[in-house]
Length: 193
Image 1 (cartoon, rainbow, N blue to C red):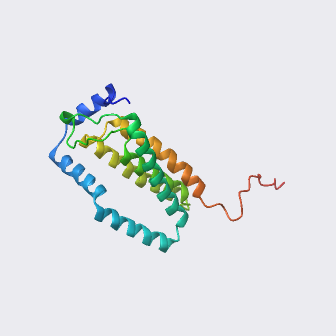
Image 2: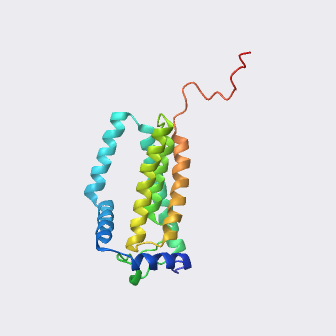
Image 3: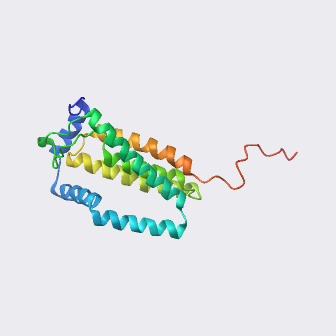
């Protein structure tokens, strides 16, 4: 449909990234991409998650995370060919991919999974919730940053993927969130005087 590359902000950011790449960050970004697409790593991660779910009996969050990931991936698969946006050109990219760019599948599925977990789990305290949000959010931002750094995506592909995935993860996480056993009491406490 549109077929064009990124807008002026995308070009400015990608040009700045391309000018400031270093060997260390090139290697790190490639390694992150390889790990994220490795069948062995994905299978090992799935097995580890399954064991954690069984041990902690965290079935609702597991279903929410899985459903969010699958829904985000399916939504991106529908949108990409319709929007048909080109990826960054070879002179701005370390890793060129021939498929449409918008929205980013990596950004959508990581943010959908992270937000679903953040919302579906009762973390027990505000401090644990903040730590979980920082760890999950930091991971999502790091992976998205690597995709931009490699030139596999325009920055707005990543932002759109984050928005799409976060929306899906938030809705699915709310649906899966366990309800309080005693119900929610919205009444104010009685005045003791």
